[in-house]
Image 1 (spheres, rainbow, N blue to C red):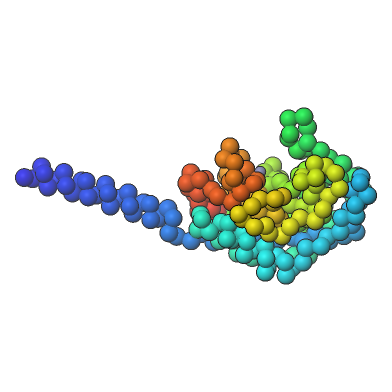
Image 2 (cartoon, rainbow, N blue to C red):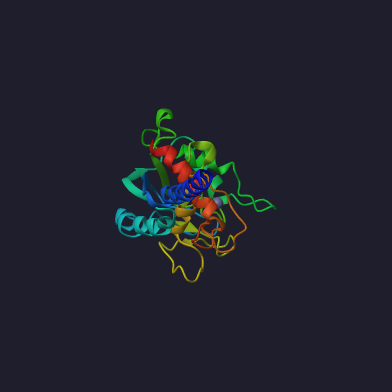
Length: 246
Ligand SMILES: [Zn+2]
């Protein structure tokens, strides 16, 4: 009798334990603070002669981009709060033109890997005072820099090696296969992927920032042509995010 009772309580404890764990995994909203930097300056000229001015406004970010990022991330119950939206002048130092020329000409290699050498140039164009200090790295402060362009067929980069000062482009020629860049869409209908959107690109890069890598899933957020996340990705992202809010 006692044995049976013990067995039942053990079973109940296991079931209760599992369901409790599951609830904790998904029911607590995690709030992360995102600073969006709208990079301002003279338009960057692409080799195809397209003049790529900065056109995304603060209102685009607050009224369209944040709601879309959060609609995508709601499946993980992670909310990105607007810590601030900064209009930031691109640093024009002695190597400014070298940097811009490098970025607008950079391309993927034969394996499809985007040129890593363009990333330190992009980092160098950010105002140092608006970046995270060394002490702030790893805290609950995330950055997205909205540059005119981030390289041919590139839409963005999480900047893993540069403190995750994530970059995205307002112009892209991914959908034209390196021909003339066009303005990114701010959002795109979730039911039919055409070329992706700036909001989805930011949501994707933030996925890298909270520990996700590309996967073979065809229409997922981390394959750049969809919006869904797997249960494992949600678990990984939430674990990383939880570490950042401590
Ligand atoms: Zn990616």
